Length: 102
Image (cartoon, rainbow, N blue to C red; front, side, top):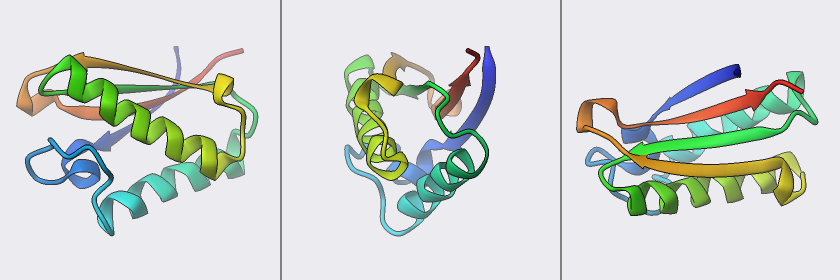
């Protein structure tokens, strides 16, 4: 429950959606825009990053990258941003940033 921000995995991690770092410049720009929205409107709300990728391991690695970026951009403690990953079909691969209800 909460506000869901869904981001295109191909923009964040390249056309094959298998990179373990954010794609420059488009991936960085997209994630920076999401972080800016959160900073302006939803500061202090706990965040869950959910990544759906080719394998659970890749999803967890990508989730850690997004989590680390958000912690840095939002200048928050790591306990306020958690991540999880799951395997998904190519057509369903995405990154969700969920602002959790208090």
